[in-house]
Image 1 (tube, rainbow, N blue to C red):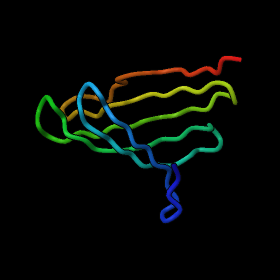
Image 2 (image 1 turned 90 degrees about the vertical axis):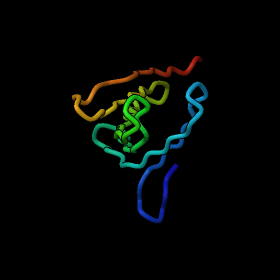
Image 3 (image 1 turned 180 degrees about the vertical axis):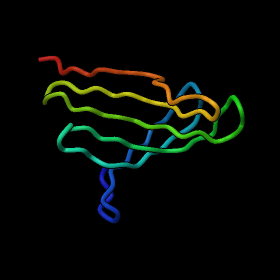
Length: 89
């Protein structure tokens, strides 16, 4: 979604296996046609907090990619998952 109050894009997700919810907020880059959304959640391995980033890239009207990155304390930023969505015609 889009929050007109602060001009940011929003994302809300539910993890059915982990039984928790996440939300993130960010911006759209029109040159790359990407949405980069950032959030913070509890790290189940340390009970501390960790940052994450979702990157949604619109390849064309029928295809987009969705990447999730975690920034775990003491580690480099790493890609946790990558998904590609393609419209069936």
